[in-house]
Amino acid sequence: QKYDIEVVTASSKTKMETANDYNTTMGSDDATAINTASLVGETKFEVYTDIIFGLAFLLTTFVAAKRMMWSHKQGGDETRVVTAFYSLILLTSAMRAVWFLIPKKFMEPSYTPTAVMAYSKEDKWVGAFVSEILVSAGSLCLFSIFILILVYWADILKKYFFPGARRSKPMITFLTLVISLVVLELINAVLYLFQVYSSEGMILVNSILLASVSIACVCRITIFSNKFRTVLMTLGAINQVSTESQVKRIMWITVTGNVFFVTRALLEVIFALSLIIYWFKHGNVQDVLSHPIWDTYIWVKHLSEVAILCLMLYILQSRFSTQVAAGAGGREGYQQVPDTEEETQPIKTVDV
Image 1 (tube, one colour):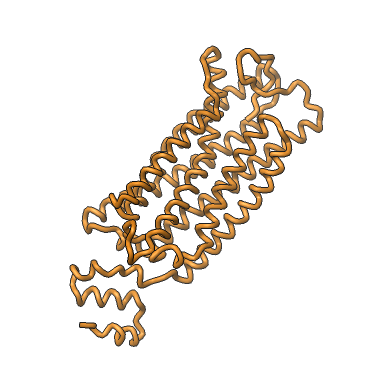
Image 2 (image 1 turned 90 degrees about the vertical axis):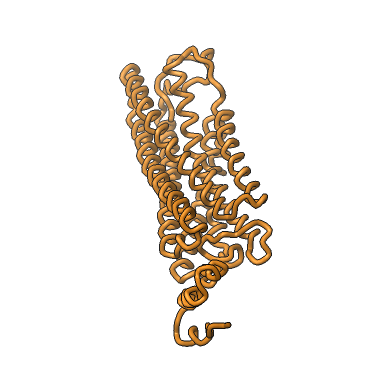
């Protein structure tokens, strides 16, 4: 039986209403065979959302690329670290821009996530897989920005609180942490390709991983920033040097970082719990991820990302503006914290 779907549609009902009528008539067993979400493409709001976020991330990509090239020309160990920050911002923005600006109809079965198994002939499993890889890679680059900050903070604090302790190279520690996260993402991708779970499983694993990293970053940022402010104020009092600008910069990073990671952790935890609870009740999660819910998730998640990237660009730019002004004013006696104990000399202040 055709159940006169064409007739119902002709009577001014939308495709979603048609699908709901069809599912009700056929019964729950047959209704599960129909991917209701695939009958509905992007809404106008979602099209505008993709364009707005795509252009926003594209703009930050250009700004980060310009700053990165300028920083690279400066030379020196310190500017190499700043160049690494700009590179991570560039990669994050570029991957997010690509993900938003490519129309979803060319990559995924529907705008909202649906259960797509690897090697499925009916669904666009390759596009869904590539889309999830783009999202995961962009998130890793974004989180790596703060991981790099925390690694260097930990190294400098260890130098002051444990002067005789052996310290590893900050960049090696950073690469070790990032590679560990990459390995976890690769395992997630392999499990999908071996059909252990569908694309819904990939989304769930990523949510749990990002929530865990967000909570860890909040704890570390709070602990390290408090210790760092203590060190800066102590050195400023001893050497009669103003460290106010550096303390403010740390406060900016601490507040913005914590707001971002707390928001991200709550978002991912709520998202993951919703998927798990709905999965145990219904055996799938495609119905829980309706267009309004998914649109809200996209806006909260990516609006916070745009905000944190712009703030990081502002903080890095203000940092260099301060240094250039200080250099032009003949700021004598200023030097960075040495990398080894053998290089230790009278310290005037700490550069952050």
